[in-house]
Every structure is written in C-alpha cells, then in structure tokens.
Image (tube, rainbow, N blue to C red; front, side, top):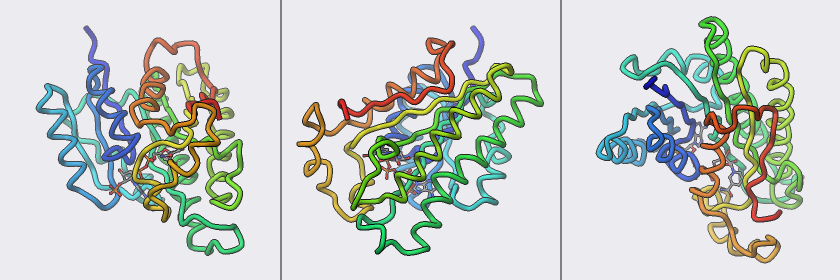
Length: 248
Ligand code: NAP
C-alpha cells in the first residue's frame, strides 16, 4: 500500500488542530504539527501519537511572521514522507470587543496569522506540488463568523475568515486541473482555549442559546470534517466551504 504521506497542521498542538492531528495519524498519515509558543502540549501530543503507533513531529512556528511562513516547509523533518496535505488551522481572534476599540496591532496580528500566514504557507505547498507533479490537498479552517460578521465581538476576525473563504474558492478553481484540491471548514463555536485567549473562557456557554443545536461543538466534531475533506472520499470536492456549526 502507498504511504498516505505527511499532513502539516498549523496550530496543531491544541484545540481543533490537535483533534485533527489525532484523526490524521489514526488514518495512517505522518503528521507534523506546529505551535507558536507552548512547546509542552506539542511534545505531549507527538508522544501520544507515537505511543499509539503513529508518526508525528512538531515545529515551533509563528505563522503570522511572513519569513516563518515562507520557510516552514523547508523545515519539515526529512524522516517524514512527502507532504500530502496542509491544514491551515492556526488562527487568532484578538480580544473580544467593539471594532472601534480594537487596536491597530490587533488588526495586524489577526490579518497576519489568519490571512497572510494561510496564503504564504499555501503558496509554498502549491509550488512544491506543482514542481514535483504531485497532487495535494489543502483544508483551510475558517469560521462561521465569516458569514455572521461577529458584531460587537471581533468583526476584524470575521473579515479575516471571509478572506480565507474567498481565497479558498478562487485558488481551488485555479488549481483544479493540477489535481490540487482546496476546501475550507467553517466551524461554529467550539470548546477550545481560543475563547479564554479572547478574554471570555465561558463564551461558548453564553452563546449556546443562539445555536440551533443549543450547544457548542467539540473539537473532534470539527476534525472529522477536516479529515473527510483531506481524504479521497472527497475526491470530487474542491472550492467548498463546509459549515460545521450546529445549524448556525
Ligand atoms: P486554540 O485552541 O486557541 O489553538 C491554538 C493553537 O494555535 C495552538 O497550537 C497555538 O500554539 C497555535 N497558534 C496560536 N497562534 C499561532 C501562530 N501565530 N502561529 C502558529 N500557531 C499559532 O484554537 P482553536 O479554537 O482550536 O482554533 C483553531 C482554528 O479554528 C482557528 O483558525 C480558529 O479561528 C478556528 N475557529 C475556532 C472556533 C472556536 O470556537 N474554537 C470557531 C470557529 C473557527 P501555542 O500552544 O503555542 O499557543
């Protein structure tokens, strides 16, 4: 059987990225996860995957630094098989609040990580796949905020994810003939640390009443959708944005 190759998951040490790494490893992929500052959860996840018989490695990388995003693929451990899939999962919101209060540095950081990081890393992957004549798969992690707008919370974040979705649709069409599939998953409110980082750990519980299913999602529920889009089961799917949002 052919080696299913490596899947690179940015921000793969916690939350949705970590759940995706577990499922990708269980599906037989080698996984390379990245983290920004906290090495411990990344090391722990690599150890967990290896103990379960999988292949995993981690790299420190702030994808909001263009230099880092442009050179990340050069740093993939050579022991891993060729890159099969890229999951642009790393994303930040900045502090919750009205747009008038958002600082310029928050806007810059959110756009750098969510938009520019995603674009530069995807560009690196695509260049390699095209040069090698290989197929590849990209899954971008958007947010239901891209369609709802997140008023009073983080409209700049919503706008950054709308950019990710437009990027997904356009690039998928541009590269479809080369056998490169590009899709996005658009999660609703999901139980991860991102809400604490935004300043309100209890946000998922607060907003649950406005979710048609009346509950936040769990990270593995989002990861299942990402894995499906990565897999050959989605062989005719490109340029799609799949909402996984409890009906939002
Ligand atoms: P999370 O729990 O906050 O995950 C954080 C992960 O991202 C960690 O691995 C963290 O590394 C890494 N990270 C943070 N900043 C980074 C940077 N600049 N460069 C590289 N890695 C970075 O996040 P999550 O909730 O799982 O979110 C994952 C994705 O889903 C994001 O794109 C987010 O916008 C999207 N999303 C989330 C929700 C939700 O409700 N959770 C809803 C819709 C969409 P360290 O551990 O080193 O900090």
